[in-house]
Image (cartoon, rainbow, N blue to C red):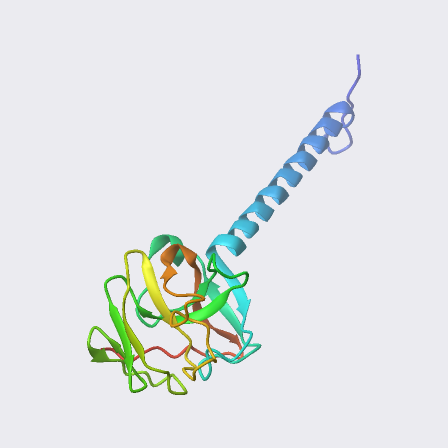
Length: 192
């Protein structure tokens, strides 16, 4: 039978102290793994960062801008006109950053370099370039029509192209909140 002795301050020493120390160490590791799991969940499902590559969103976003991304809204909300979203299409091997121009049920057409949604010209002060004309497109169920803010032909791979086309809402991986580097808000469309 092992004996435990009481120290000068009345603390327990011996096998009981060793067991308590091991138990405390195990719980420390368990808490560490739980914290890592929470951090991983937050980074992969709640917020994230994205770096802009290319010129398709100029003048709103420039190449090398760092964006703060809201990933939680993918699960809790629906895309709206003017949202700047991260798209991971099954048709492409990379992500795109684009602006939502039309949502389910909208009719989008481009005539004379002007984008029309449901027969009304969009007041787009955040764009550059003049897009080519495009016949009317009806946005289907669970789809969005996206465009880059740089409307110059050939500068943006977006819903005008058969390579991408209409985007499934399930292919939206996040919504931009703001630019972190350089620090600034992201231009929103005027109210229609």
